[in-house]
Amino acid sequence: MSFLQRLFRQKKQFKIAVVGLDSAGKTTMLNFLRFEKNIETLPTIGVNVEVLKRENVNLSIFDLGGQMHFRSLWGTLMRGASAIIFVVDSADRDRIEEAKIELWKVLLDPQYPDAPLLIVANKQDKVGAMPVEDIVRACNLDDPLKMGRRSWHIQPTVATTGQGVEEAIKWIVIELDKL
Ligand code: G3D
Ligand code: MG
Image (tube, rainbow, N blue to C red):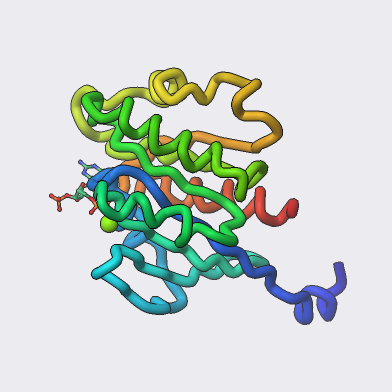
């Protein structure tokens, strides 16, 4: 691609939904990324929207509240999302089953049959954190029949130090660039 073509190439715009149980580390992860702007914060309904520019894509990242009473809003707030980020607290073995149930509610929503899925296996620094292989198994991600044509990836992270966070976003950008 020539310099001029590169200069005038339109940036593609995408909406990304970040979901996961409360306290998984969604907001901590997003705080680690340098945002262009914060569109609005709606703490009352538990949504935070940030715009992130990477290479030739603009990402509007919707950080959705994970508390039980907000989860019913995920469907509405996720409308139009091109990719899904699901954050898991890898050390919270007691709630991995609950995380799996919420994840599959999102994956079985007919609105996003093919949206790329990034699982963020967060809190890898904690003692007893499940390695990614255990999370894949616990969340049934290793079932090719269920996953269908969806492209997915699991990224271990420590959101408090930012470890793995840029790699996670990089994967999303590469996937979105294919759309
Ligand atoms: P949420 O937005 O998904 O609800 P938060 O979760 O980002 O608010 O994080 C919940 C708590 O987990 C925070 O602690 C945060 O510091 C902590 N946390 C997030 N990521 C990590 C991580 O990778 N490792 C560790 N050890 N802790 C993490 P507080 O104490 O503020 O509630
Ligand atoms: Mg939060």
